[in-house]
Amino acid sequence: MIDFFRGHGWPFALFYLGVVLCGYLALVFWFRDLRVEHWIPYLTFILLTIIADLVNLNLPRGGAMVSVSTPVTFASAILLGPGPAAWIEVVSALVVEGFVNRRPLMKILFNVPVLALSIGLAGMVFRALPFGGATPDFSQPWFLLPMVALGLVHWMTNTGLVSMIIGLSDQANPFRIWKANYAWNVRHLVAFVPITAIIILVYQLAPWTLALFIIPILLVKYAYQLYLDMREVNISTLATLASALDAKDPYTQGHSYRVSRYALLVGEEMRLGEGELQMLEYSALLHDIGKIGIAGDIINKPARLDEEEWHIIQQHPSIGARIIQRLRFLGEAAQVIECHHERPDGKGYPHGLTGGKIPMLSRILHVADTFDAMTSNRPYRPALSAEESVQELLKHRGSQFDSRVVDAFIRLFESGRIQPIREDEPVEIYEILNQT
Image (cartoon, rainbow, N blue to C red; front, side):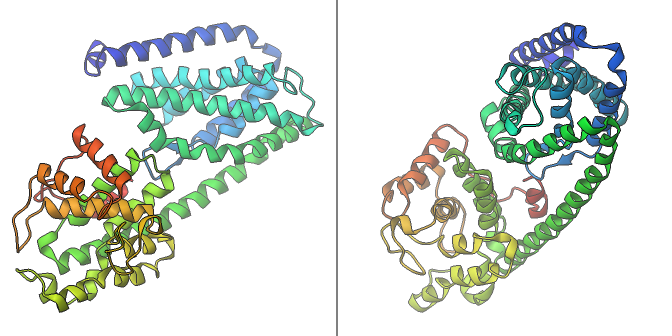
């Protein structure tokens, strides 16, 4: 155990031990709320929670997951109280984490109190609010109001503690981890509230009817697996297109990957939403796909292009947009790709758009694309240094490049969070996409 804490640092150790101490003390306090005569409802909720936990949905991005058991947990807190709900969560977690998934002991020791604190505190909030309490009136819809508060407290406590421990472990910003992994999935609470209400109302009729929820839980898992399979097909399509581009222009191999890394960092710095970040990454990976439609002798010309050749190369954003438009799952990526060479002063191409008429994702992509182009060797010139490239961005801030994007890029560069990626760094596009 000492080696475990030594490897993560003292802030991690203090936070870990603090959460563990608070969680297990709370469980001791809540033990007095357990009633022997209620063993059948306890056992029923434990079994249903275990079954639901076994089909948790792993989210594609950031390693987060959506627990199918969450509505069941909410219902147990409302029907049985915060103490019993916390203990039900603990027993279920020990079975699933310890005996089924065989998680490391130190992770189980932390996860158990986090789960207990999350539902226990949420249940206490429900009981303290109007229309909640120990015996809410389920015949009226007003009990849904404190239920929403219960959901928010549970979500914020759980995701906050987990993000903090991950941040301390990885020496990363906990808020960035929370924002990337959890901030966007608050939308699931919208679905969990009515599901929780249905579980409660059905339980009022007869407790055994909770068993009927096993079937829809399994159906949700099956439907989500179909979604993941389709997403894999989509990712494979992106990987194929990016590989085709590298085959067309081997001199810039890895360019799309590097642009996507720079663009994502800038997007996160500018606090874009999760959906925007995903679309930005896809657009960056495929931003030059239109070059497939440009003759190879122009793409690989070891000298500067003449006027006619330059006119031809300027068509690649529009060609790329037409290609991407056929892939429905990419959504707005076609417009982002078509506009990634537009400039705020209207001197860009292919349409000469100005200022706010250029999509923000395109403006970010333009800066990331230009920075990588400047810091990479090309047939007609050697690479610039990172400092020289940054000076070029500053020089043309507001005219060639969007001011806010450049400012965000400069902040990242000065803090060391953006540095040129080596051209010889091995890149596997499919692997990168699967990390998102």
